[in-house]
Length: 392
Image (tube, rainbow, N blue to C red; front, side):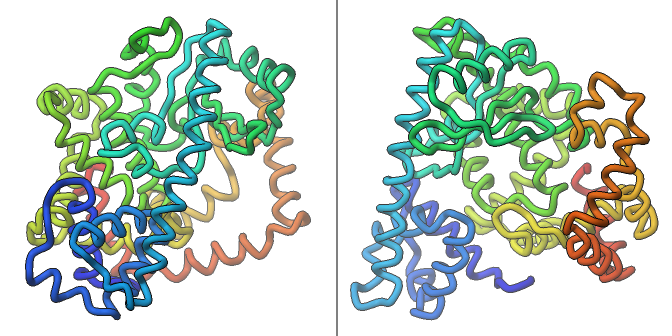
């Protein structure tokens, strides 16, 4: 494993399990929490935005000792998690009230929703607020927020607009759940999201996903980040809680996943959760997944991304060609004018090349070339086999 050992990962998840349940560490696990191990756990869990949960788990077990160098950092990160949550939650509720008054259907996503399954909502941290709208209503919402509510426009990506609230919170206004060029196998199901929503109790326009669609979206989002170089550890905590929800219909969820070609991937993710949370032994697939995900950090890394893209494009040369000539469906996400004027595609290809060559992007291009060359034949074969085994 790169930069991390299995014991560190295991103890992080055992402490998170304690934080989320009434469980306690075993005597053997307590003895493993040396000062050196606590320092490693602090470093890794902080990078993964899970240190506040680990701190709660330690606290429930009467750890660490107040003389420990990690005692104050763990305490401080819990306080910061609460502090981050309060203004974010205030802005979220205020925004939802504004959107309800506009009489436009809207669908909150990700952390704003999933924190409801945590024992305390502040335990599920997030950096922004994500809300989905129909493309037909997005411009109306954007204009109102900018002109009437004091929001500031930040920019557009291939699937959302970014704005900043008057209170400084980052809001992503989505017009599709996942970019069209990611998790292609699941895209058809993702496009049907509005068929699997219903108004939240007490509201007319605030929508909620059905359980099976929300679960499917969570798995699809993990798959998207995995394809992008890694998804971090936090989605696995979410998944563990989703799988433990009272009354959840696993068979219905699985039928939905199978229909969207994500059941094999979901099963591997569930197995890895059981390795980390329940102590099940690693097999070849979960060991490879563990190494890839931990090496990728909280949001994936460029080296992992390029290694996966090589496999999707037939090797090193195929990856390089795919970056030189972007297909229309990808290029239009960079240049929005192509949505209305696809005939400009060759012009935008040339514009993109000029931008890469003359606008300060050559360092990144050359770094990607070096990463592309650094993937060995054996690494490529292992990754190819892994992608086949997990259904991607």
